[in-house]
Structure formats: C-alpha cells, structure tokens
Image (cartoon, one colour):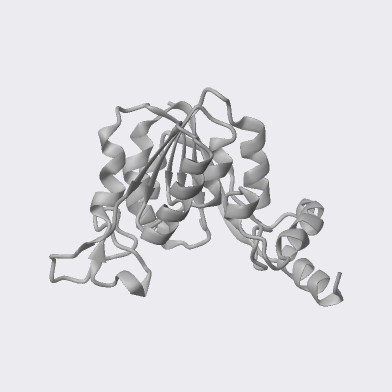
Amino acid sequence: MKFTDQLFFFQQLKGENTSLADIKYFNRWKYYLQPGRNPVTERLPWINFPAIDFLKKNLNPADTVFEFGAGGSTLFFLDRVKKLITAEHKTEWYDTLKKIITQKELYKWEGVLIPPELKTETRQLNISDPNDYYSSDDAYINSTFKNYVTYIDRFSDGFFNVILIDGRARPSCIKHAVKKLRRNGLLILDNADREYYLTRSNEYLHNFHLLQNHFAPIPFVAPFVQTNIYKRIK
C-alpha cells in the first residue's frame, strides 16, 4: 500500500458531494486497481461501490433488467436476475460478452448489437438534448444513436424492474427508459457528475425518488465517480 495511494483517496473524499463513510471502500478500491483486473474478469458493473452494494442487496432473482452498454454489468446481472436485455453499440464489447455468455450457456440473456447511424441533420446536435440522440465522444461526431436508444421502445411500459444507463446518448436513454420501469423499479445512471446528462432530461424524472447520488470510489480506476440511483414512485 503506497502512501501516495492513500493520499489520493483521501483527497477525493474531501471533494464536493462525497461522504467520509466511504473510507470503508479503500481496500476494495486498491484491490481492483491491481494490474489485470477489469469489469469482465471480475463480473462487476463499472459503477461506484455504494451503487454496486445497493444492487447486491436489492436485486431479485425474478427481476427483468435492461442495460444500455455491455460489460462487467452484463455478467453481474446474469448471476442475479431472471432475464437481461442488453443494447450495445460497439462490436468488440458485444462479441466479447457474447462469447463468454455462449460458453456458459446463459440463455436468460438477450443481447443486441446496434451501431450508431450517420447523422443526417446539418445543424449542430446537442449532447444534453434527449431528442438529439448524440454522444460527447469525438469518435462519433458524425453519428447519432437513435436506433440504439429506441430499441427499448419495443417493450411494454412497466416491463422492467431495473434499467442501467451506462452507454451512449444517456440523456436520450433517460427519456426512453422511464416509462419502461414498473412502479418501485430502479433506474441507475452512471457518471451522473457530468451535468449535461441531466440538464434537459431531469424533467423526465418527476415520478422518481433519488435514492443515491454522491461521489464515491469505483473499481478499476482511481478517480471517484457519481452514480445516481432513482426509484419510480408512481
């Protein structure tokens, strides 16, 4: 254990919207920073530790889950729920998860690969506008993610117990996800410290109660992140 690691961790704990109670995650944080550890091999979602622990306590074996973005969360959910639907935009991630899941014969998974489409509008799209289906990633500056985001629309309202938003065009994902959660369902938004995710999509969350929203340690990377967890109340 290096002093510099301890110093960095405690500096992060002194930041805005943090909790000193999260000192308990220091050893886990250090463990997952070791070389060779990643979300897929460890079967963990890439969200902060309080959110991971919340899901471990609150997921039900009868739950049906949707996730925007494949990864360690895919394997984490498949260990714990009845049915998982995953929308992924990147071929490499999709193929990696599909190979693992096929080998393990995890038939309760429905994964779909939905690459971005070239944008047709000449105007500059807004990453905070839920109606633009746009990503902040420079690799997709000429693309939109409407097909990816709207895949969830094929399911009936109130179909899912849990929806994880950890992929592209997250403001748009929020807009389309909220009606698909049943009452008391959980919506998880990762990297919620990026203000533009909620600048114009917060209006869709009026039927939700915010359960968790502070900066906290996260596995596999040093800086803390904010993971918001919302519960649908009506």
